[in-house]
Length: 67
Ligand code: SF4
Image (cartoon, protein in one colour):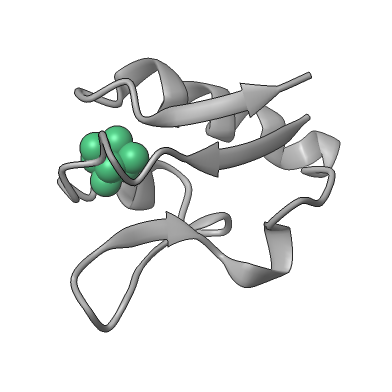
């Protein structure tokens, strides 16, 4: 699983950060993004459920998961 955020959709509500702060972060400029360490990388198995939950609750359907 790889994950990214479609910045054209994200409303920076912070829900994904609340659910999975290991992978998502609020940036200095007020946007929310996948942490640099996970960009383009395989999300480890132990975090995949939380990433999936963040995806499922995102109000803007901005979280993109690639299997
Ligand atoms: S839950 Fe969705 S809309 Fe909210 S900050 Fe995360 S990606 Fe953006």
